[in-house]
Image (tube, rainbow, N blue to C red; front, top):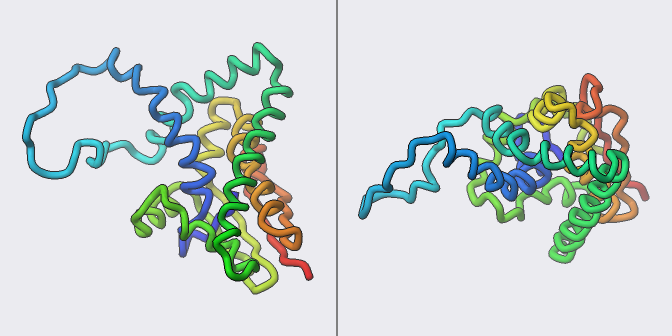
Amino acid sequence: MLIKPSESASGRREFLQGLFPAGALLCSGCGLLSASSVLRDSPKNTPGPHKFLEDSGLTMREAFRFAFQWSYIPMMQELARRIGRDKLVEMLKEATGIYWSRYTKSFTERLQKKDLDAFLTMDTLEPTIDNAEHRKRFGSLAYTAQRIEHTSKAYELKVTECLWAQTFREANAGDIGFAGICYGDEAMAAAFDPRLKLTRTKTLMKGDDCCHFRWVWEG
């Protein structure tokens, strides 16, 4: 998925490729909380923001583990046991590709001009998180990236740390993580415009020492 450097830290992956499954799957672990926590009555008529808007106190690593390792990864591994690992991975790739292709095509309909810079700023129209500063902070905490090149024709990025990769690899599910998280990068580039080409020579999710991306606008 599209990632921007840590200095701007408004990358698409931090909330698109990451928050898409996380937002949907956080709920799947909520049932575990009721079995292990002491329930308390919510205060009535308490002024201030709703409790859903409060800081949970989780670290980034704890939040990622809660989102993926409690239920999502075990469920995917059980499906893999039933239908075969290779088949599951291919199905996840197909579903990921369809979703991000549709998302990207919807985005391009709002563009007056299609070029590399427009692709790189795709996250600015993402409605999931309204606060741009929160997006930047999330990205700066979720991964470490170094921009190598940025011109009107090429954008190259090296990611040396990634919580998505760390979380899935800790659970021996890097192949599932790549299919459901990382594969969207290729799908988005292909759906945006045929002139946009993505080359990714290394991927943390697959066990490499970094993710190495290079987007090139041809023609």
